[in-house]
Length: 136
Image 1 (cartoon, rainbow, N blue to C red):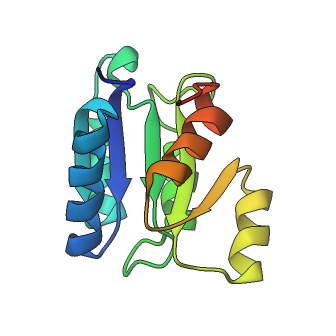
Image 2 (image 1 turned 135 degrees about the vertical axis):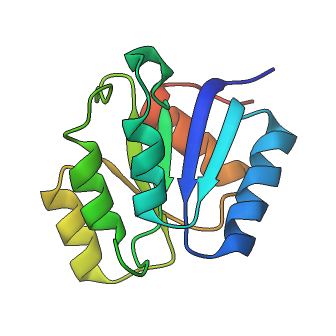
């Protein structure tokens, strides 16, 4: 059983991406789980989506990445074709506990700020917070 259709992870650490992809598959998070190592590659992928209902329901981005950080990525996504805040949850999944990052996320209207790694308890929180889905 898949809870969502499409989930995107963005993290510059390939091992973190691999862990999240395997974890998502293990728990049946989504039909399709896609990982990117840069915000730019994720944006290329998202910009190529031509059907607004193909846009991912959940995007989890790290904050501290080279070139384009998570804050810059979120700003770009919020202006994209297909993005609808009623259908897509964009959240930070990061190691940063820096108060400045948290305040900036709040100013950018990023609803959710989570600390990695993703585990079953955190996944339950994300699904409940973002989609109203309760896991047993």
